[in-house]
Structure formats: structure tokens, C-alpha cells
Length: 250
Image (cartoon, rainbow, N blue to C red; front, side):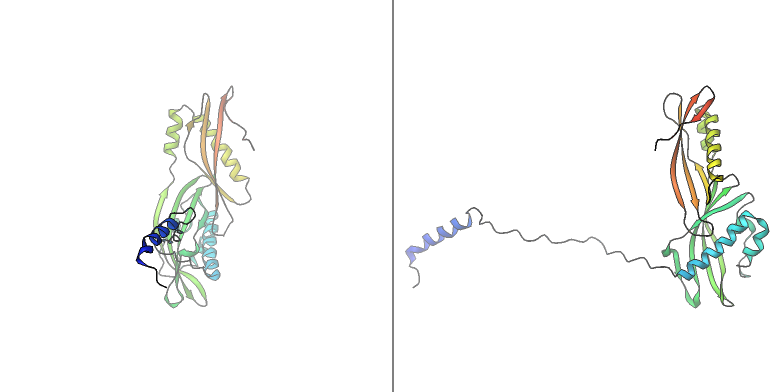
């Protein structure tokens, strides 16, 4: 039987009471997931054979930087179209190619079996101090069943100048501290089983009679891409015999 008109107000009041009763609150809708931007595309994996070609070419250049009699062997990687001087191929006189690196995504496949890669190179002097870094674009092509370098272009060069470090040490009257740090780093580089180099970033006061020399230590496996770098601050204290390196806590 349909409810009478008299009962309608009572039904409305009952519905309102149920809506405001404890625990009767409606559940909030589930939050909507919002994604900003596009999902990044996965980085393509490099062809191991192409990686090995680049490493072999760079290893030949690394050998030439250590021994200039091996420059002709490095040049055999070049086609006749590549006209580069020895400084570009093996570094300037007195320089050693310490390390080189390129990520998988830096290899770009081209037509006719060609590919090119952007490579970062790190050079040091004979004592192991980093003096230059460089970016190159290197193109490879097939020739007589092998891959050779068809183009080599230097895209960026940076000199690692130490003049500012020397001026900082002079302002702090701590030239002797800088010399001690240099000797310690040269000794470290010469004792490594891997190719090694270092860089002194600056000289800072670290308290009364104390100096901090922030440094970078680089190491790499010969002929292989990639390198390790460690931030190593050298703490020094002035004593009766001048500045001496403080032992580091393990």
C-alpha cells in the first residue's frame, strides 16, 4: 500500500537522521592518479660489438699517448678522409690519455652499417695531474670486413688550469702545503695498478694552522670505457717542520 500524505514528513525526517548518523558518512571516492609529462623511453642497449670497436680504437690512441712510436698503429684506424694531427689523436706532448667514457645511449646507428659515438676523454701530464678534458664525435664505418674511423671531430675542449689554486695558496701563505699535497697525490698515482690521475680543486683555511686541499682521484682500466672518481680532501696542519698531512680517520 502506498504511504499516505501524512506519513511523508516522517519519512523525510527519518532519511535525514540516517544520513547524519555516526558511521553513515559516504566513502570518499578513490583518488585519481595524475601523471605529469610522458613516460621516459628506455635507453637503447648498445651493440657489444660496436662498444668493443670504440674501445679498441681508444686503446690504440691510449697506447700512442704513452709511447709516440705507436702513433702509426693508431693512425691505421683512420680512413684517408680523416685528417687529424698527432696532438688530436694522442694528446699534446707530455700528455697521457688517462680515461675515456661514453654511455650506451651515445652510440647512434646510421645507414650502411655506419655508427657514431660521442666520447669524453681525460688527459693528464706525466706526473698524473689532469690537464685537459675533451669531447669528440667519432664515426665508424666498415672497410674490408672491419670497422675503421671515418670521421673524428673535437666538439669541446677544457683546460684544467691550476693557476687559481696556486693563487689561493699564495694568499693563504700556504704554498708549502700545496707542494706537500702534490707530492702525496703523485705518489698515490704512481702506486696504482690501474691508470690513475688526480686534480687539486682549491686550497682553504680549516682552522688555526690548518689547511684543507680538496682533490679528485681518477682511476680507470686501460683500454676500457669508464672511470672511477673519488672526492678526497687532504687535511694539513702546520708544525715545526712545516705543513704535514693529518692521518684520515677510517
